[in-house]
Amino acid sequence: MITVALELWSEGKWPVYAPMAASWPLPGAYCAHSISWSEYGVTTGVWRLLDILAARGTPATFGISGSVADRFPDAVRAVSAGGHEIGAHSYTQDLIPVLLDIEAERANIVRCADIFEELTGSRPVGWMSPRASGTIHTPDLLAQAGYLWSGDYSGRELPYVRETSHGPLVCLMHSDFTDVRGAMAGPRAYRDVHVDLLDHLRRSPDPGILNITVHAHVGGRPFLADMFDQILAAVQLAGDDVWVATRRQICEHVLRQGGPGRCADADPARAPGRSDYFDAVGA
Image (cartoon, rainbow, N blue to C red; front, side, top):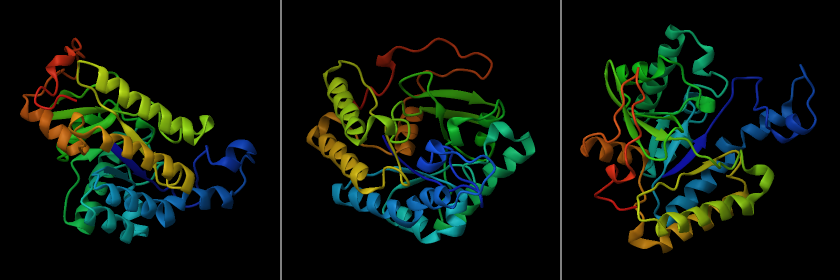
């Protein structure tokens, strides 16, 4: 499961982990460097990652801020034209659902779906909250707006179906080791942990998911992008042991299988056995 985050912050805002902001913070001061650093993904990084994915013939899911469609529509069109899935990733990265009231959250969810549908002709069926920080209302609001999956969860290794008042919502894991959170360990560590995990999953008798997440403004830079490409090369060498799928494809597969691991909103229920998942896939 390959996820590319293509993100933007609101005007005058930037990620707190931008190198200069993190190493030499100036509280309350405007940080032009951090803003430009965060915009690298939409100006440069996304194009490098699209080239890598195209060369490998590999489908991915792009979690895209709605504001990217407004400010950099060519990048979003290129993602769509490349055959990749687009998942909504809030309008901006500082518009975090858990900090909104329910009506503002609802408006943000619907706004993002409308923006991508208008630009690409296809309405997204997946959602990822910034910081993976949804609210108790998020599952219902997503299902009501026509979304089928959410990437805000990490409680289980494999997908499960959460029941909402508006239908099922497939919960997909958030990555344990992204290029952002693994940046301190270095690009080679980012490569090695994924290649080693792939090897572990192939040796396991049970199905599993290799969740490769890269941010265009971080992993789209030359050295990290090369490590990302090397991970994809290892996946290709695994051949038929691995099903490379978008999040939508995984979601639809789970629903076709009858929704393994269903749980109600009020009751997380027991964790299903690993063999309950992906019987038709094998990896």
